[in-house]
Amino acid sequence: MHRVIRLKRYEQPPQGYHEGFLREFHHRQRAELLKPSLSALLRERFSSLMSDFRVPAMAYAGAASVAVIAGVVILRQAPPTETPRAYSVSYSQAPVTIQKMQPVSLRGDASATTLPPNATFPPSYLLQARPASYESSLSF
Amino acid sequence: MTAELEIPPHNDQKLVARTQKGDPTAFDELVVRYSPRLYGLVYHMTSNHEDTNDLLQDVFAKAYRSICNFRGKSSFYTWMHSIAVNMTINFLKKRNRRQHPSMNDPDSRIENDPDFIAATSNGDPTREVTVHELQKKLNAAMQKLSHEHRVVVTMFDIQGMPHAEISKILGVSEGTVRSRLFYAHRQLQISLHEFKRN
Image 1 (cartoon, each protein chain N blue to C red):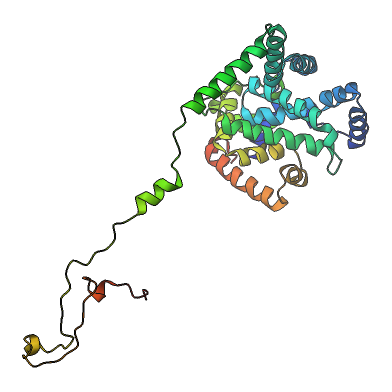
Image 2 (cartoon, each protein chain N blue to C red):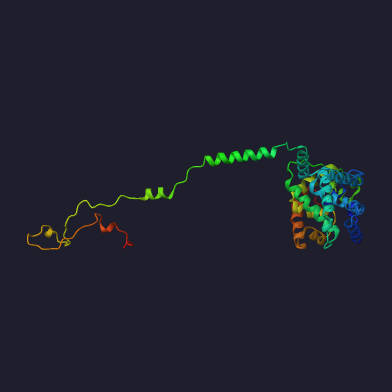
């Protein structure tokens, strides 16, 4: 197998190929030097564009006046800010008024809902019409 | 065969040093010296003359650009072959598989080669195959090999390089080179069974 494969060494390039190879190498090297890179091409285009560009007279003054006018317009259109008083008004609540006060018994006995005529208990008042279970555990 | 001539490495060092100092004519000498051998390496990998020419130009251009980084840890011969092998394998990975081969005509001296006579007639003049038929079959068999197997067959069987040199160029152990050769030869024997000697 080795000997059969070895016969491929007889496949040689056309006569004079290797002599011309060095010439082609030189030619390609020179072509490579002449071929500008993409970045160099862009830099050159930009610099030539900028060299042709001339700033007209009064251009800087015109640009400054446009900036001033734009600033004034923006400031005028800015929304009014809310004052601290407005917040205090919005957070104010109507004072709590107790419409009705009613005496109640603190004893849990249901049979004692109707008091005997001679009972003498000091009167107690429910000041808030809200059950205690609604209070959070951390409120004192 | 020019490609089989041994190249004295000591001369390479002087030429490399001159190139590194800015003498382009020294690199020209290296191109003249190495182009036949590297041509064979790339050509037998690609089976296409035009691709080989372009690749070889790129190989030398790359070598010229990076020769200042060559510190002489390996020989220039090994360094150049490594560049050529890596660039060729990268090229083959990108190349379309349907690419048609563009083969060079075999030298007319092949017909007098005893190995050719033995392989083509196999002792039976009635079943002789022509040079071009043999070339076509050899090429087809080579193209069936993987890139890694093809490169060791090219360097060992066609170019006659020793295992040690191949291992340096490919950056693998000699055992790996031998193993790749073993599997490549086995595959070639299947493809070229008709040329097997009795």
